Length: 419
Image: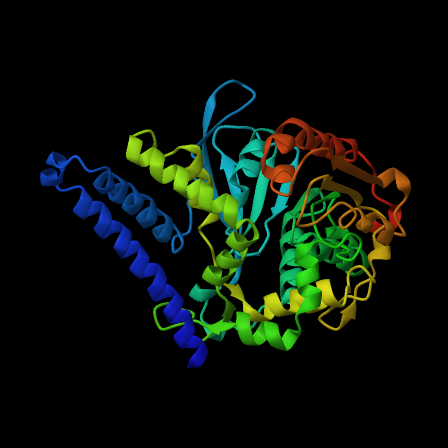
């Protein structure tokens, strides 16, 4: 109950601040106050509007909001989000474009389970839909999953990816963004050994910690500084009675958000103070740059505690992927068994989360893969977010990834895998 109480305390704090913002906005908006020439009243209404919106977003899953897409025929086509596989901890979803012939490129985007919803990749998905059939791993908020569904650690995560790849078939091109890169590499190796007919055609790893020790960052340093006992004691809480997952041990989204904000506290503080002043001056809009970014950034989800702890211990502390000692469901995964899947890595030169060197380490682990099936790209001037959702992705990286997919589309499978 101690952990449940702290979980509910955080939710109470969020709810109270949302109420305080709504109250300040309502009070300062009374018509009678218009007769008082005091800028403090206008500022209070602006603060209330920004505060209410911000704290409200923390408890809401964002919508994908992809209703239409302009295709190569110059027409706008309706986009329908359909669930292909429904599993307890994630759905495999497909963005089906109406009245369009099926695209030859089939792309599975593996979204991170790192505190934000898969909708964080909305712009990435939008950029791929015109040229591919796009599927996405849509991870569910742990607070909404009953404890009767059992645990979910990095081995379960890897097996989910195996199931998704099997379902989509061998002509799939997988793009793993950030956190899932090492586990997607492991899932591919798992299939390469045990079910080669189901392995994907290509694998693109973007900004992922394959070998966190290759180039240490603040994130990896934190993982090495704290013990697993300290993490379990300070970061893990039990879901309160408000949600279907009552009693489940989680790394709460609100706690994660606090860590995210602390990494760039001064920049976030300035962004919110600037937005309050813009609202006070009547210059802000519902969909301005601030709201577009923070509506997504502030929407956080709880992570299963066993997934969080096993990620820190096995990926960052023990380096099981980097050392090629990762075990899934009792089976030791050998990344060297990947011999038929073209692998590309993408890194940002200014990435302060997965610094250059961490992701490209995957190519050295693929000892059974010929150099002709390996590729890497280092994007100058790009940070972590930019390599999958920013200008660098749209203008440079996306075309390179699609070219990589096309170059390997006609590559024949080995006879051993075709049998």
